[in-house]
Amino acid sequence: MEKNSSPLSPHIQIYKWQFSSLLSITHRLTGLINTAGFFLIVLWILFLALGPEYYNFYQKFLRSFVGKFILVGFTWSFVYHMFNGIRHLSWDFGYGYEIKTANLSGIIVLFLSILTTFFIWII
Image (cartoon, rainbow, N blue to C red; front, side, top):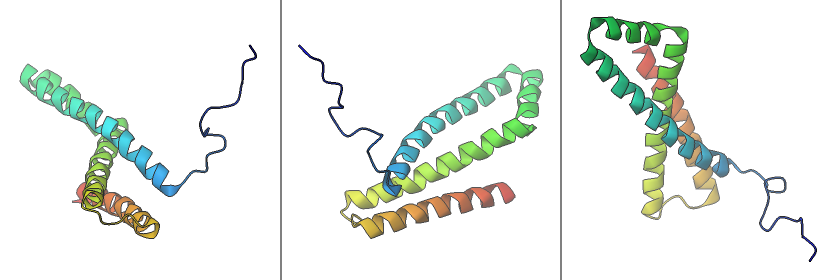
């Protein structure tokens, strides 16, 4: 029997990327990032319980460039996931299914998440 090498379903090489696809993947990735971020919060509590030496080490890491980058990234991830979750809730109620509305709400979610993260870290 001869083996057929063609894909069985639309393949990534022929699939046209859409803005909504990017937002959907980003929502899933931010869910994973939030899980890792909450692990960092648990580590912070653990180091706090272990004493000043451990806590100071952790604080020193968080004040470094890498630590601040992780904290800002986690903040954006959390805020984006929250705003996009509200967007999904509106879909659950039947609002925003039109392509224009879905794209506009996605742009609003991105803008608000970046703006909110900026204000959280400035204030």
